Length: 87
Image (cartoon, rainbow, N blue to C red; front, side):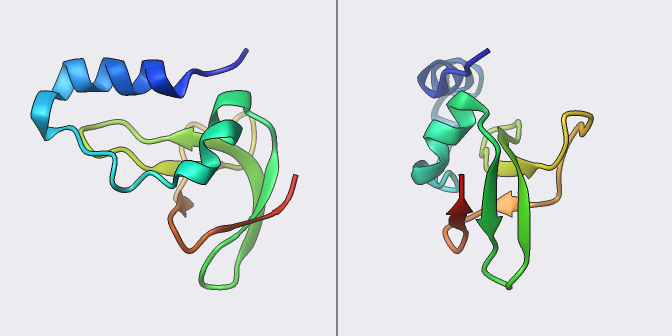
């Protein structure tokens, strides 16, 4: 099951209107959000984690790293300091 980033953006713009803001989205992670492929990410503070890319809800979404299929959320925000280390 692939996700569609453009459809996500469309739905959220309809929901939040002009308040909707994607400035916290690191666009290099869009393909991994859509495919749900597991990747290894290096965070700016030196930590390394592996998981799939999810997205927060609300008017200013951000990508997050979901560590397991059983995870409901994550505290690992994928920001501009994050690097893809392995696919």
